[in-house]
Structure formats: C-alpha cells, structure tokens
Amino acid sequence: MISLSLMHWLLIGNMALMFVVGLMMFGLRRQQNRESRRLDGAVNHLQKSYQAMSKSTIGMGRKIRQLDGRIQSAERKVVLPTTDEATYQQASRLVGLGASASDLVDNCGMARGEAELLVSLKRQPAH
Image 1 (cartoon, rainbow, N blue to C red):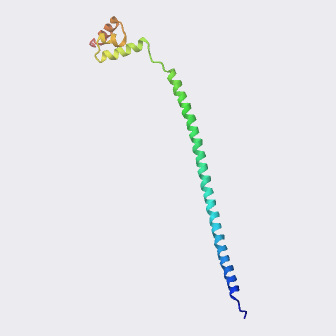
Image 2 (image 1 turned 90 degrees about the vertical axis):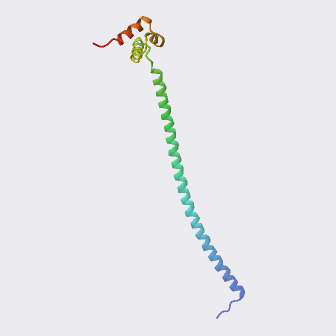
Image 3 (image 1 turned 60 degrees about the vertical axis):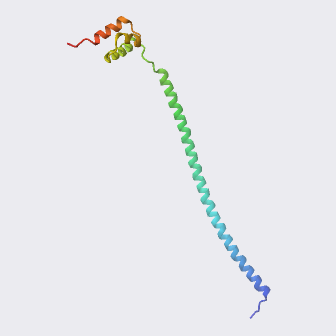
C-alpha cells in the first residue's frame, strides 16, 4: 500500500474543496441565468403593457380633440331663437303663470298694446 504524506493529503483535500466550490458556482450561475431570463420576460411584458397604454392614451387624446372640435362646431351652429315667435311663446308661458301686461313689456320687450292683447286673450274663459 502506498503511504501518502501530509502534503499529498492537503493537495487532495484542496482539490476536493475546489471541486465542491466549482459545483456550487456552477449551480449559482445556472440559478442566476434562470432568474435573468425570468426578469427579462417581466421587463418585456412591462414594456409591451407600457406601449399599449401609450397608444391607448394617444388614441384617447385624439378622440377627445375630435369630440372637442365637434362640440365647438356644434356650439357655433346653435342659434338662440330671437324671432317674434319665440318672444310670443315666452310671453304666453308667462301669462299662463299669471304675468301681467306690464311684466310682459318689461321681460319680453313687447309693446304695451301687444302685451295687453295677449293677456286678455289668454285670460278669457273658455266657452
């Protein structure tokens, strides 16, 4: 049988220790690679979500600008009635609520004769 010196046993022990450390480093490296791939996937998912949200936000901004333009266009087209018919309709409603000829002259800008005629027509009892 071969007898090994202390130096040989130290060399064998160091080599075994280096082998174990090498295995541990190999395992840690594999674990690090798996974690890196998982994190890359998560980052890619977040980037895609961010891009989708950005596109959606830009689309919503465009749609809001379109709707705002349509609203402004519609507001420019709205013309409040200033005709005599609208004035008479308003005066008729006021008489129905009990307004006097003086109230119609003050609030509707009607002539005194028109206001008195309208009040007398609206307050006549129905036969």
